[in-house]
Length: 159
Image (cartoon, rainbow, N blue to C red; front, side, top):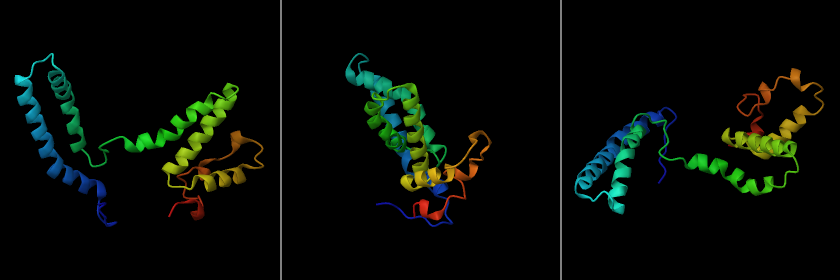
């Protein structure tokens, strides 16, 4: 069940406090378990190797308790790069480096638009429309066209 937060609440501060309350005891218990089991485990067995590996990583697991802004996993990053993984086979058909560069540029624009809660197709049409007729791109101010710009029309933004 996804929790709802009021605008007045600091989501990250609340998440930080919940982690300290609920996650820290679990990490401490797991840490104790690993330290107890490693004393009796044979180091060459798969279980002993797993415990040693885990013991080396345990200090890093506590970083998640330091700041509510930290994500507990990398799922968002994995989802963001999925189009690139899928597109990788298509890139084999880029006839030259210039074509590959063009593909990478358009993927980058699309993913940046998505990351800024824009409707990618509408954003691309908006960009192409605004950039049509520009004679000298070296003198053009692109800042108002950036996905994070406050000048982006509302019909391009996701509700």
